[in-house]
Image (cartoon, rainbow, N blue to C red; front, side, top):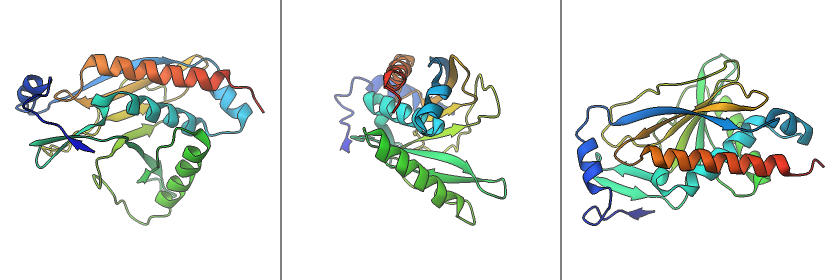
Length: 211
């Protein structure tokens, strides 16, 4: 993690403008092309959720703007070397718990961490861990719906800056990814780079030979 020198930061003026907004976040949705992704994940015996989450994490880490976070009431901007996934899971009582994983470029250890993180979160008796750390991105999947767009919740905290990524049912040709980001840190260009990276990562997965 490094602290951004705002005096020489190219985004200084943009950040100074958007930090005065009551709600500096923006939401956008994009179609992710991934033909037969569900079928390929099933054939390989791996979690579809985990495969998508791995592609998202790879994409987020490829785009430096998506690793920027605010601290000290929004006065300090830091850039993490890498961020990790934090996502919502449903406990047995039908309410949400928060799970965390560990980023790895290798899919197998990443999926193992996702599985153990989800199990640990589901075992919690109560909701906990919200906003515990900022070296994460938030993810949520609603596979029972064909999600086309999401407007994410905002806490209103001045240091709130973690990106939020949502998707729903994976269709035969792909799925819709909804993204919520702080506009002082991230522009539409960066989200375009994210979607390109996610698609490239999934294309690589689809091209792998089934064992």
